[in-house]
Image (cartoon, rainbow, N blue to C red; front, side, top):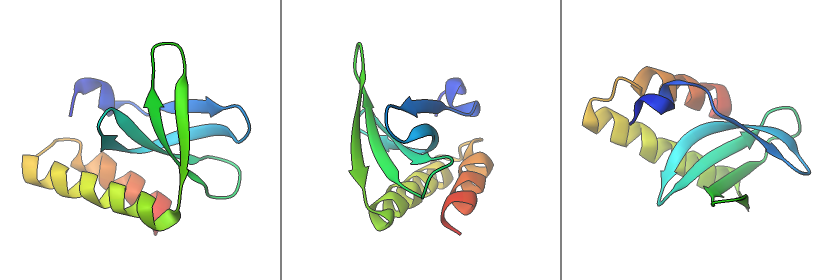
Length: 92
């Protein structure tokens, strides 16, 4: 993971408000969750001038986050504690 991942990332969704990054999801996508509203999850693909939001179910979101934790463990990433904290806050 790059150094930029060490900071928290937020996006503003036009309907659901502030989203926070839960995990990278591969293929240029990131997993985000709503911050204030009911728990909703989005796969977000950043494009040159906008972002594409795809709503996904809770279990799919958890699966992406678990894959990220496994990848961070396998790679010995220094970000593992941060990703674990986000996982626990979001899914437990």
